[in-house]
Every structure is written in structure tokens, then in C-alpha cells.
Length: 178
Image (cartoon, rainbow, N blue to C red; front, side, top):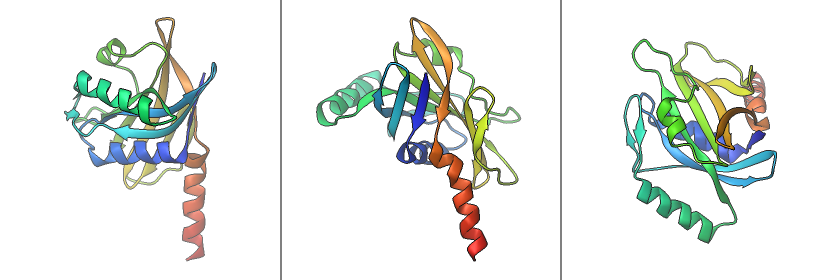
């Protein structure tokens, strides 16, 4: 299984994660899937999520309402959800799934976890061991991991995001032109 992030999805994930940094974010991911690939086109944050430093809670009735609206008004399907893990005190955030994350993981869906930590210097975007995407934006170190649940088993899967990998190259090119 591979998870492909579009430019829109990548930017949506970054913005919703950085906006609430030090607290966690939550949202749904929209796209389409095949038997071995999930294409994520959009990341839509939940405005009413109850954000805390080490957890985020959502109203499942509201979530159901949102998923029904997506099904009836778009060609996209809800392929899963995402949330962030933020640095808390001396503990650095990781992309590991917590017990609660695993408990609410739906069969046949993707879960994206973003770890956000402070960083002193910029770092280019790239893939790291296990298919995770990692980089830095405006003083934030961000690591993005994807998981997939099939046959009651949750497995880490590779993320593919050509936009993110080219992002720092484009930025460096524009800085050189000045």
C-alpha cells in the first residue's frame, strides 16, 4: 500500500498542523483508492475538534454528518483521517500511533500522523526510513507517516509526495535568483 499526497493535501496538512501547534489537530482526508494505492487530494480540518496538548477529541455525530455530506456532494470519498502529535515539554513528538489512535482506527482506511517539533535550522523535505516524509517549515520540524488498516491489522505504509520533495528545491531556486 502507498499513500499519494497531492499538493492541496500536503499544504492542508501543514497549515492545520502548524496553526494549532502545541495542541493537536484532527481532520479527514478526501480522495480515492485502489487495491494498492490511496490518492489523497484534500485534508479538511475539523473546526470543532477539542484540541489538547496530548490528545484531540471529536464529536462522532458531527463526524458522521461531515462524512455523509462528502458522500452526497462530491466525487471524493473519505479515505481516512489525520491528526498531529505536538512536542510537549521535553518530550519530542513522534508519528507512532497511541493506544487511542489504534482503538478508533476504521477498517479499510488510512490514518496520517504528523509529528511537529521546534527546529533551529531549515531542513529539506525528503523520505526517511519506513516511507515517512520529513522536512521543516518556518522553524517547525514535521514528520508525516501513514498507516493503513486491513483485516484488523494496522500497518505503516509509504507516503509519496512529489510536491514536498520539490518544495525546498523551488524555494532555494527562488532565493538564488534574488
